[in-house]
Length: 119
Length: 510
Image (tube, rainbow over all chains, first blue to last red):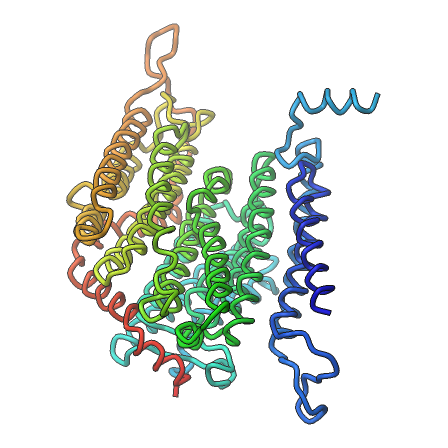
């Protein structure tokens, strides 16, 4: 279980970082979302992974740590708000700047290369 | 009321933000302005009351919901955090006052957002819980995102996009760092963490080190330490100057968190991990000072100049934190207050100068004369003397003190020449900017006469009041340098008093 969980987090982080480093806002937003999923999973695992353990007193013999669950809940809520904000901001950026490049202007060299590839 | 005083600097701005959204304040801008200024003054008074209380009764710990530490979240008002809370609330008063002169109508929800930003900053200063620190960081960030977009144009959108993406990545790294530290230490209360760090063994030491250094990355990002400072000049220069003036305190939140985390949690008593960030901080701080100074020399307008001065002040503060002696910390506390106020004053001055110069705005070139050159010139001169660190104003005291504090530090040979050269460069850049703006006027080509002021915009009384509060701080900090430096030494002593801090926080305010 640990291996599966850890590789899930690892794959999500690497995908997220790869996408954040892209030059268009849409992949960047997707990357940020994936990164925050990975962070939430990671935060959840900081209370150790366990099966069949309740976080409420009196319901099982062994208890899971309830604090990471509370932390993850907070992190998810904040993450949602921040993602919503960055989505709206990128739409506004697309409208204000006329393109969806993170720097507001597409480097000219790159444009030519892309065209050649498409042709 | 008295026992809840510690929570008031957080609760009051929160309520103020909500009240200002509701009728009649949401609709009528005059009511909203008056209420906003009054509520920010109320917050300031509460902070000052807290300041007076801790001077008589000592450090206050407030267990939220009466859940005692280390299980619940505690607010921790020691002299350092209370001083910074008062500073933030004062800046809040200044910014609401200045915004009321018309800037608040350039977008929506200016006043509520200012109060929410103050809520976040005050919370980050007061909290004694690492995860709660994250939450307050997010509160202040989301308010700052919206304030940055306030009354913005294309360049603001671009700067905001960079700023928001950088900070979202920063928040994610913050959570990873906290997750690692919680996994290893099993607690998030800062005092409890400090106790547990010393007991770590084996591989856990390295995990805690990774967690601690990830936190350093985040604080460096918030505080704009090299190489994570690139977002700052554009963000601060494109934000509305009144907002940028309030942002002057935000980099100090990162600096404060570094102070707290690397003296309390990873300080003298942390066993293998003690002072683990010091070697990083020192060189990064020096590089930050150098880069900031180059930025100051290269600035083409006053707002960029002020933004780069913020970077220099962050570098200076972090260098002092890296020394980790009581004397260095007390110099850092004095310098922190001084630099926040003076950079805020410079941002506001840049705005006022820009308004009176028409199209040239605040660019450092010859332009049409201003409508009120004397008033603005005198204010600019005071702010410039303070920011350069020339006698007799507060900058000089701060500079002498910090040079004295670093006299016996490990790398004085590098720090002194670099810092003094940086000061010289700042002196050159600021005096050049001042003389160009105030004395070089555009000469019209035909008649060879000095062109007239393009508009008759004069400084609004509310703007003037805000400006005077900030400008008066520099001479006042000189006149009352004695009590202030005593206070700073007291605050630094308490910051470094490990056992006392642990005892006070874990007693949970009982």
